[in-house]
Length: 433
Image 1: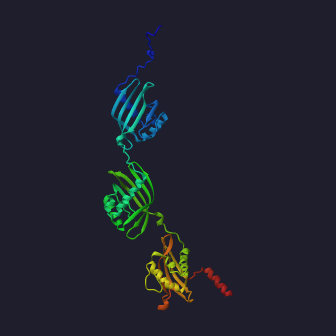
Image 2: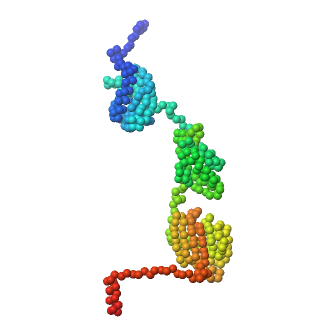
Image 3: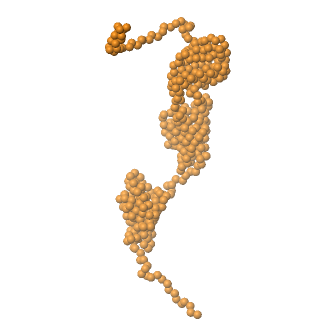
């Protein structure tokens, strides 16, 4: 049988592209065309340097730019920095109607003076009689990217315990060591920002005398790249007196020298706690009725509970100041046997910031005998544990009954000045009468 001895297949030679000649130096000079377009600060002129199917993978945007409009959009913002580039390291490859230039370039930002170094890939194609950018990939230098130190939200919250444990040592230097080299402390009870190690040590020298221990009640955590934030509400118990103090906190931590340190610590009082509790004059006078109703129970415990935690009672018929719960209760054990009920005859009220005062004259009717006893009183109330309590109560007998009458205050009688016409009319009425 006949077999194929020779078979030759080939493209038509006139259809083979000869390729647009270009040298390595000419490839590198294509960058200058793009750089000159940047200098115009016109994003359209920059976008015009890209081929019809050009793709831009920009330095500071995750979005591939695959058409003229999106490439122009990127340069609208980038050109605000007034960038000018310079190639530091270049590697050129030349093909048939295409070439590439890849390496390292650096931009000087005219708007800020900042210099930024990055990696670049330009792939050029010969299109419409000129060389255009078919592909441009720009990225930051990877070794300059900081690798994030991993930390969980639970671990961020645990950083507070390291600081709290340092408080427990009562050593201000150990507490100050929890702060970073450039740490800033805005403390709860000092107007002075503490911006260095000695300043932070100084603050805790006094604060640690209270033997504080803290507990976070609520907080919100944010984790970033080698920084973390914990902000919320904490409460301290003071070991020296048992007092509890609640406040707002912000801790910003940074990873420094292989460990997490406090870069910023802002602590402040609860702002609503500094607002005065609203009360009217009528409500201040009504506070007496709460105390009077407690008398009516004939229970000295109920009466003593109307007084604040640090109250002082200077009673009518005892020389002993009553400065705590037990002493106040002791006084009323005897006084309540008379079944007293009081009535305010004259009251003068003053209202301050979370305190108020009612002073004047009151009279008691003794239920056991029917006797009436008049006296002078001073009640100073404070807002404590979400209610008004008696901080100071001074009661005394009417002194003139013991010391004799005192001169009465002189009052000036107000003289009414009448107009002449009124005087004349009154005189006329008198004559007619």
